Length: 355
Image (cartoon, rainbow, N blue to C red):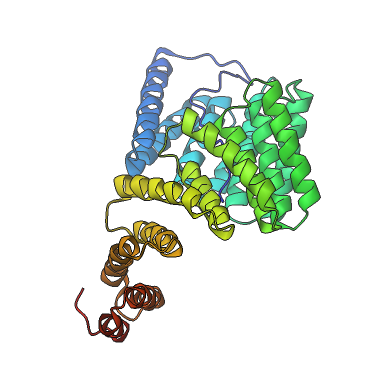
């Protein structure tokens, strides 16, 4: 499960490493790059990445020509452009920009916050790329920098702690992972952020860790806490809330608590249909999951149309020979047999029936 990361886009650094005498022409250029940066930020927020990239690059060119390559405003724009590339999963383009921004800010007085935020961005870039050996020391430094700044209980420090927990969990170092998740939750509680999405992420990660260890009670309680926060704070369509519902439903199914699993999976399906469309492959997975619960409950007439629908979506998207389609045929045929419709089941299995 992907963790809750905060990527920082800084429009104006507000820090000056040196004093410049700015001419009237330079002031006009300053106004130009300011407008570029505002427009770029809006374009990024609305998914107009090509437009945002062009605006950031134009602002950067103006800033470098007027302020020089090592100005803090240049660093802010470098960071913003890197965030844009990170949004587009263009890590190779983002990494050198983060490193250059970091090098500039590390030379500036009173830029501790900017240094820490860029460190976090770079660490997240590595973590998302699976380069945890590079991400871990950066996250550790982020936590240390917040402590140095007298803000060890900041939400940003907690986010870094959760990411460290995820790294240790992936390494199988569960005690270290649990320690960092709990420390993140303590940090968020002390800062009044104990009911925020960042806290929900820590609960989700703890739930995943317990689930992987077979501790279903621990997993269930943490998934439930996460879902309560997400449903209250961000509504019912949050992707993490979907993950929490799915995970809880799987636990209930494994425990034979089908009546408790059913509404969770039904809600997941409703949300996915609304956000992804009715014929998306992720929708087919949710349709099949709900059908399985009905099947386990002996509700064959409710399961049958769902299995059929999952098969139709997958066959349309993947082709008749795909393993997922073959499995869907087997499941659909199985429920038809349970209804006593053996000939139809045989036709489905052989691929001879038109859906």
